Length: 260
Ligand SMILES: Nc1ncnc2c1ncn2[C@@H]1O[C@H](COP(=O)(O)OP(=O)(O)OP(=O)(O)O)[C@@H](O)[C@H]1O
Image (tube, rainbow, N blue to C red):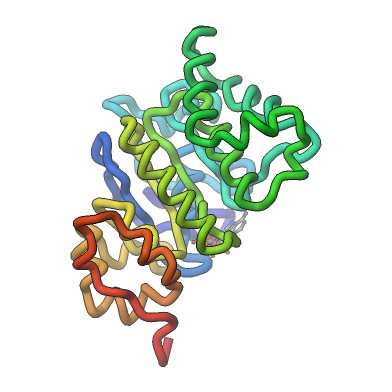
């Protein structure tokens, strides 16, 4: 796909694939085009003055790049936007209800989705009657993820879920992403925190000024000198401690490299 915001070309001939049941990460610095990529899939580009200028997007064999955003949700794709954007003046419970609006599921399916969200994030059950704006940053991120899960998506689009969170909270969110994936939801994860993302993903793409600069298995990218030197600048060392057993062989990635 290629995407523009008026004269600004934000993505140039970007091609990527999220195999069913996997976590795929998209890495890159500020302005690389990561959010644009997710907006193209969720069909929310036009809210930002952007448009797909060429290319196409398919989900489970169906072309989705001509659908309205609510139809994309109904097709099984939900997005957690950057910056969380919960409805601050609404209660936690109403935020979750809002997430089910685009769902075509039955009442029973929606009740199941809510149970699953409460199991993943017990704090959202405990604080159901509170206004969402009173939650901490990490809890708001949980609510944003929970809200997206209310539509029972088969593909979850996550835009920088660790942004602005303390390392411990970022690690908790990472655990939950792993759990959501283990329960059968594919994940397309956009992150500047490359160390965290490469530990969650099986495959990753590195965007650089709107183009795919590198792609491959996440463990190979994590070990690649070029990736380490050029793209793995933002490193969360606590996320390293969060690495699942069996991925312990991944190198600890350096902080900002000299000369970047
Ligand atoms: N609404 C918009 N109007 C015009 N240009 C935009 C708009 N949104 C993004 N852009 C431009 O498109 C390019 C890609 O931006 P995008 O937000 O997708 O990058 P990103 O990788 O998500 O960065 P960040 O991590 O800073 O959000 C940048 O050059 C940006 O300035």
